[in-house]
Image 1: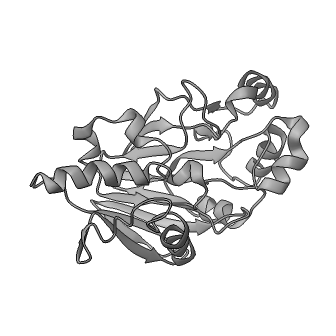
Image 2 (image 1 turned 180 degrees about the vertical axis):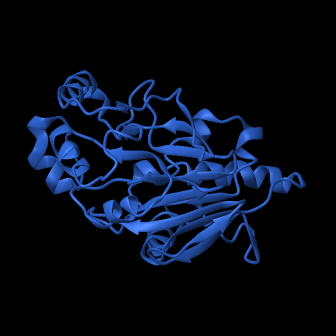
Length: 263
C-alpha cells in the first residue's frame, strides 16, 4: 500500500496544503488539495474519494477535480471516467444541498448528463467494508462537530488507520487494537496546548490531547504514528510540544512524505 501525502495541514497558507492523501494512485482520502499537487495525468488516475466529512478543507478540490475531468470527457478522452465519492449518507446530502447545488458549484453528478455524471455518490455505513482496486476500506465513526469517519485501510494483510479530524474518541482505538498487522497510524493534532479549549470545541486534538489518546493504543511505541492537520501558523510551537511528549516512532507529516505500508 502506497500513501502519498498531498496535503497534511489544518490551514492554507503559501506552501501549506489542505488534507488529502493519495492511496495507490487511484484512491483519495479526502480532497483538500489534489489539483494543487497532481498533474492532469495523475488526476486522471483517480477513481475513488473516501470522504471523512464535509468541512471545506476536506472537500474543496472535489469541485476542481470534477471540472478538470469534465473537460477531458467533452474532449472524448476514454480515461475521463467518473469519480465515485464514498461517504456517510449525511455527508453526501450535505454535498448535494450546499456544495454541488448549482449555486456554489455546478452539480457534476449530472454533467454532462443526468445518467453519465462526472461524479457518482456511494453511501456507506459505519464499519461497512468497501473494497476498491484491491484495497479494503472500513469507515469508523469519530468525534467531530459534523458526521465524520476515520478509515481503516487493509491491503494484502497490512493495515493502516487514518483517524480523520477527531477530538477525544474511543471506537477507532478499539478497531486499531483488533488489527493483527497494524503497520501505521495517521492521527489528528491540530492546535498547540494553549488552545486546548478551542480544540475541544472544534473536535480536534492538541499535543497533550494526542498523547492522552495514544494511551488507548496497545501497540504504542511499536508502530509509526504520523500527525496531520497542524495549523501552519503555530507549526514551530507545536513541533516543540510534540517532541516534549517523548513518544517513540511519532512525528509530524510533511508534504514530501510517501508511506509504504507492507505486511
